[in-house]
Length: 393
Image (tube, rainbow, N blue to C red; front, side, top):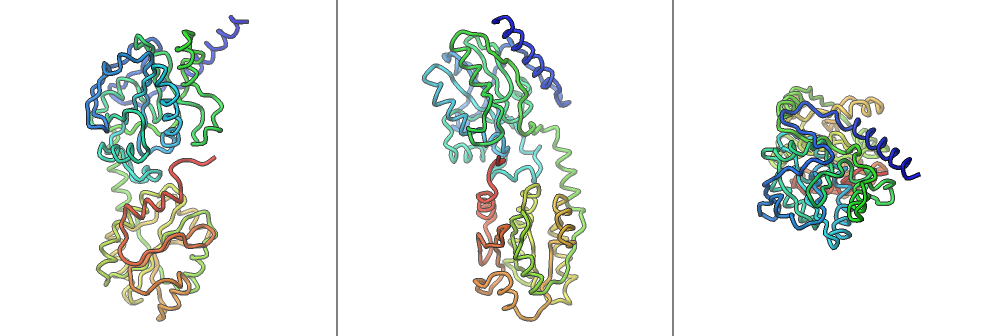
């Protein structure tokens, strides 16, 4: 029976091995095999110190896990990583987290699950906010360590024995959700338990799941995406109070941000780039920016020209949902004379001055309102608190 179990474990490992061997065409990207030595590293941590492999030589087992600020899978795993450290550090296990990503390899719409990008400065903020109980190191400048280990995604886990030979690589566990109850297979924990007990690792390789490593080599693709965004057409239509009331009712799956503005309003013009940045950041999520200009109807061309200059185009992902609603744009110009009617249709609590912004939930309720210029970071933090940092089961 023991022989059969060993054969089954080998077959499972071989199947997983075949699934993770395919690596992107990145120059210098290595593939660590079971039994290989841990590559050395010299990386700066969010504690401001340099960290080397030798710093952890006293650990019975060393876990190297590649994570990132922006990835929902990685963020969902953070609680379980902290729990792993709490459970196993007293037993001689050390865990070191490394961010492999280059911020220059990230598109704006890939940041829709995090307040932060993957820069070192924002790693510090993220680690502090999430109260990491493990070192968090930056490899985004050169990505030398990520290539040496063969990091394919975040999270990607590598478990080394006391001789610093690789004994497990792959997923932390089989769940992409934050709730520990959704975990059915805790492969990394099983590997650690086996090594501590002096037994063979039952499943040496699994397929990592999560966000692909953001290589600096992909910078050109990001540049192309930015250029495409700038070249997208921008449309604007007139709308009356009844039309605004219909939009305000919502009834879609989207969180809607309404912004009332005018080209003659200096604060409106000044804050608009933050609104566009917000629309781009959440471009792959259930979110929509709806702008309503208070320019005179005869100045619709002026409003359109401003929107074009701001690149206030519709994210591709929203086109289908707008078509389903019988709409062609998310930019409007209010055509009626009475601003009171607009206030009744959008938000009776609007005091009157512009710019004015409200967040409307799918059920039509206002979950946030703001009079005056918005702070972009505060706005995006509020949106993220509603949409969530990771996938929901």
